Length: 457
Image 1 (cartoon, helix red, strand yellow):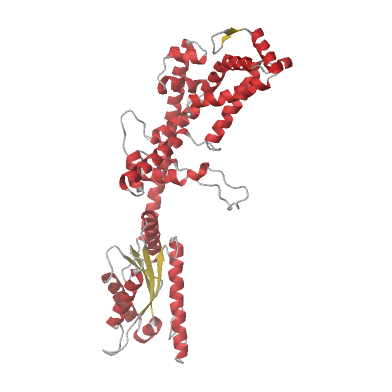
Image 2 (cartoon, helix red, strand yellow; image 1 turned 135 degrees about the vertical axis):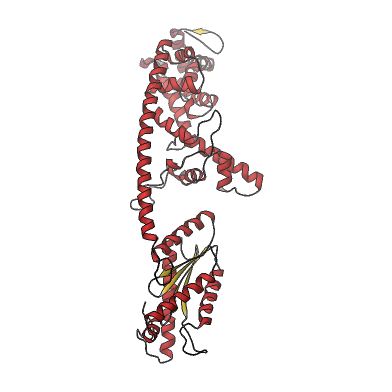
């Protein structure tokens, strides 16, 4: 027998009588008595769903809706116990509530908590400074590294549902969370860093359900073994046994994972060392004529600066420059004079650019310039370089004769592209347009166009 909300004990026969009275006469008092009688059943079921982070009172309220529906629809003549019938409706109502309150795809608990911390930190810093906070400010307040904040923000769409009609990119499987970036900035007392919590959560998933519950109750909710035994309906000795066996399993799992991670770190270190040596061998070579780095280093530097500009929101200028009519100059003056002219052009470029700028040899006749923190001024900088080379009159036969000149193609990030390849291609196209324009001018002047007069690309 159970006690109703009014304090009256009801036997099974009395419960059946109340159901019959409500079904035949719609007796409101019988209905209220039945709801009060089975309310403990709702509270018991609601406690099973507290791990989803919703308040127990809210779960009970939703469960009571299911109980009311069960009382109104239950037919005692079918021979099914009401506890069995009502449990399904109460659970269904609570599950519908959780489905509407949470995402369809459930994210891990540690990721949900970190997302909430980042959201609260963003709101707090926005109110404090009157602007949207930087990644560094959020990372400092949440105590994780900047890469971890960026990774969490980037993968927020992972747990959102997309349209079934939207076209799917080939090979696109959606964003993935890079767990190697989930690191805390510094250790706090009585608090595990995020990377340790991830490892512990993964190890806990390998335990049996009863073992996980015992570990959670004992270590995370600070319940005694007696309280755990009462909640789970098992003996205290069995609780003690589960704690010891669970800790042994966790210890073995963590040790094995630590050995595996150590092996992976050694392998990654060897791979990085090998890649570093290969890159140093590939990128360490310089042009023997001008002393500048070559095209591979130019592409590598442009790639690094584009990534840096994309991360911090800076603009970036890039220019490709070529010497006009250089083949004609070499045929008239010889290879030695041609090399001296290229060396002089390289020295002029380096002398008239900043230390943060990067100049390299591009192809046989040209140079490439990477200009960080330069946007609209890129064209003016390149025009100054072209005028400076023209002013030196390199290779001129007379003091007033015309020397070698440069033609240039310019591109700016992010106006002309969002990747290093796009920027390089845009500058190359701009340089080709300058060549075509020069050809049209020479045709208009009736001059012969051949390799001796105008260098081919």
